[in-house]
Structure formats: structure tokens, C-alpha cells
Length: 217
Ligand code: SF4
Ligand code: SF4
Image 1 (spheres, rainbow, N blue to C red):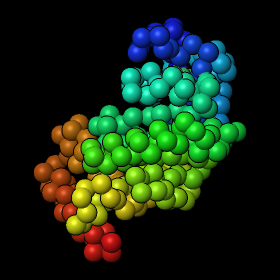
Image 2 (cartoon, helix red, strand yellow):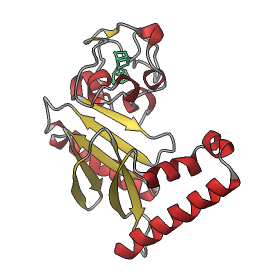
Image 3 (cartoon, helix red, strand yellow):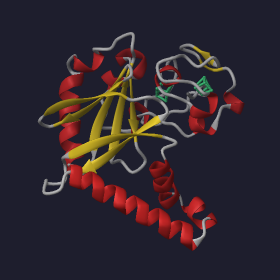
Image 4 (cartoon, rainbow, N blue to C red):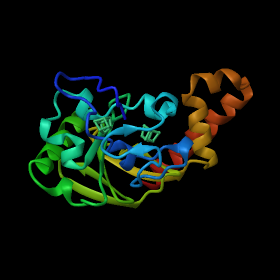
């Protein structure tokens, strides 16, 4: 998403790419995953670069940012974009729907298995977004969570009694009231604007939801 060719890891830049402008959703533009943004000059850059949304300004893919990600992951070549969550607990690999099996080819699949081991040791997880389907990759194998929409979010529930690397997953709509409460508790600005009663009510409801999920698990 960077057409000024700023380099990040030495020798890497967005030059000739723009894959994230297809593979990722941009909420404020109402742009779904796997569809080229109408503002994209494919393989060149953003036609509204100076006015591009905050979501685009703040995104840096793993290829640019993580020295542990090999050159073969260059998105324009691999047709995959690695997204690293800011807390580094969740890695999501978005796969171009024109090359849906790209992640199963070598050397990518071996990399993914190795990353899943590192993620598990960090109490994190690795997801692969292939078309509308979302897969969880673990050191033991993979699980298809099924179709996850751009208006949904995956909540990871650590399995009780496990070593910390095993999760169950629940898919929630972004406007699900319980997810709204989770956001309220996580967002310092929203929490500051809420009353103490609203916060304690949200905490109570979220705790009850987690307890219910654990019981069902
Ligand atoms: S996928 Fe990465 S390298 Fe390609 S344009 Fe986006 S941020 Fe730049
Ligand atoms: S607004 Fe620009 S940077 Fe953002 S997705 Fe569209 S083309 Fe890419």
C-alpha cells in the first residue's frame, strides 16, 4: 500500500506489489476481502495515496516488517499477504483466491508449520484465510473453521487444561452485543467515555459469556 517505495527490512518495499489492496478487507471503504480496491492501480500503487484511509496507512505486511519471513514470501510472487497482529498473538496469512492452494505448496507449507510451532510457544496462533474459509494451522495439523465474513470476528478460547497452545474458536458478528462489550473493555478511549456502571455491567456479561463457552467446551 506504499507507493513511495519506502523500504522497511533492507531491500524490501511495496514496489510492484499492491496485493494487500486485493486480499484484505477495508471496512471504511466497504471493500471486501479478495476484491481489488477501486482506488488501486494494480501492481503500481494507490490512486488516492495522500487521502487513503487510516486502515491503509497503518498496515505493514509481514514481508516488509519481519526479517524471519523469507524473500519467497514477497506478496506479488507468493500471492499471499502475511498480517501480524499488533500483539503478535495472531498471524493471518491471506491467500489470493486466484491461487487458492498457494499456501499448501512448498516451501510455504513447511514455513507455516514452523510458524505455527513458534506461535504456539508464544501462546498465539496461525490462521490462513483461503477465499471465505478460515483455517487454523497448529503443529499437529489444520482445522477449517468454515466461512468467516468480513463482518465477523474469530474469538480464540484457550482450552482449559491444555499447555496454552490449544484453542477452540467462536465466530461472532461484529455487531454482536457481546463483542461490543468486549471492545468496550479493551478500548481505553471507549472505556474512559463509559460510566462505571456500564463498565462493570460489560465486565459481568463478558465474564459470564466466557464461563458459558468454557462450560460448553
Ligand atoms: S502486500 Fe505488503 S509489500 Fe505488498 S503492497 Fe501491501 S504492504 Fe506493500
Ligand atoms: S485506498 Fe489505496 S491503499 Fe487503501 S486499499 Fe485502496 S488502493 Fe490500497
